[in-house]
Length: 70
Image (tube, rainbow, N blue to C red; front, side, top):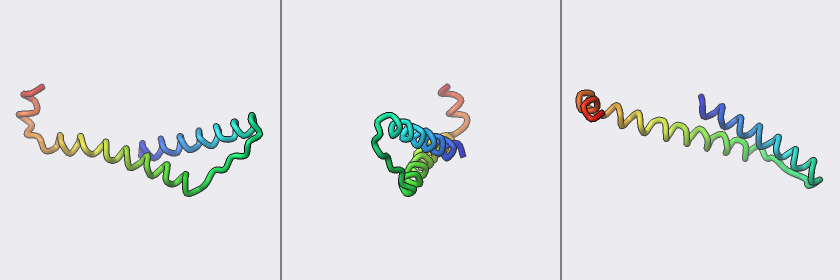
């Protein structure tokens, strides 16, 4: 959930920045819907991968050994 919200915030900021650049430089900008889906999907994928890896590693540890190494 957190990574999808972060991805959507990034898309909104990207669209806003694109509008600002288009207004300042009079250069046309284009925003494609597939690019938005890819950006949010990539954000979610990175968040899921880097959220699951440490939790899976921690779940596989023996609790006594994990506390002893602290």
